[in-house]
Image 1: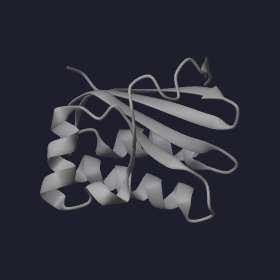
Image 2: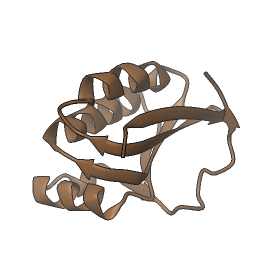
Image 3: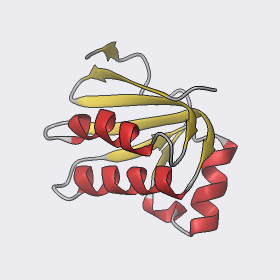
Image 4: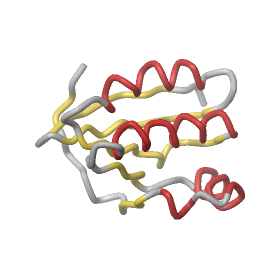
Length: 113
């Protein structure tokens, strides 16, 4: 599945929906498309339900986004991470870094961008 990253916004919260493989080939694009949405005053939710593969470079982007958002007290969460995402979080030992939302949480925001 081809990578895509789209943003939706509601009530000071941005939901990034990430689809496809998030790997070395697309990590720079993922970072470039996601980082502007990590800027204040937004809280950020990354919907990972459609991520089919995540490697260490994709994980690196998620960790960096989390740092950018949380360093000034804003909220960051992963929504409905796919089994591929959960597996990498577990293998890397970083699952405790991320708040996890159910699929129905943070839904129906307005499209932006």
